[in-house]
Length: 219
Image (cartoon, rainbow, N blue to C red; front, side, top):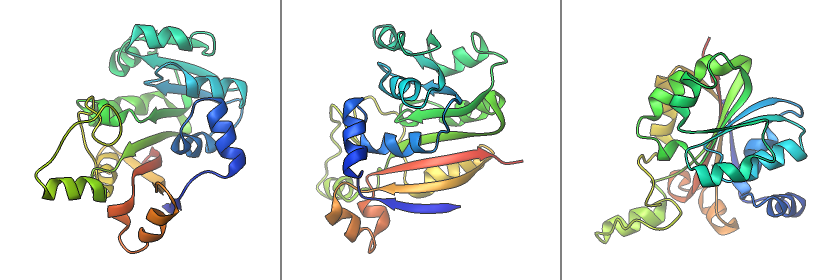
């Protein structure tokens, strides 16, 4: 397994992300994707990632989004847009479809049963295909500090986004993929700012803000 540290995009990467309304960790995932690939964007939101993959990498992208208003915004850029949750989509509309990459960009933490989803999507991966996933780190030092003070307050966004249903540490996100029958090929720790990245050498689990994972089915 390749384990890396990431403290922010280079200037040209930052500009590209901003042009497409992407956050830095998402650029890490799309950097793994080969041009002209067949991609499933699970939980695509308004389609920013779909737009990037279509326009920059010339990929064929299928988007799945449960919010019909957000899904409509992805229509101009996707080969196909499915409105609904990922389990329903793979079991019905997308049954039999195969993809080179399945992307969960800040999605796993919103699922009530992520292990069921990871098990199901195995059948939608082509031979040699992989899962790309970004997920926040609940063991970040800011969360630990608040817990010591008796606080666990949900927020509009971030690690304690009020729509998050599941929370992961480095250990438990590895276990989720391993127990679901995947091999983690790359595990990247994302730090917010150079200072946290330097402190991450001393306590990586405390100063990691987010994990980016590339995983393939264990054969």
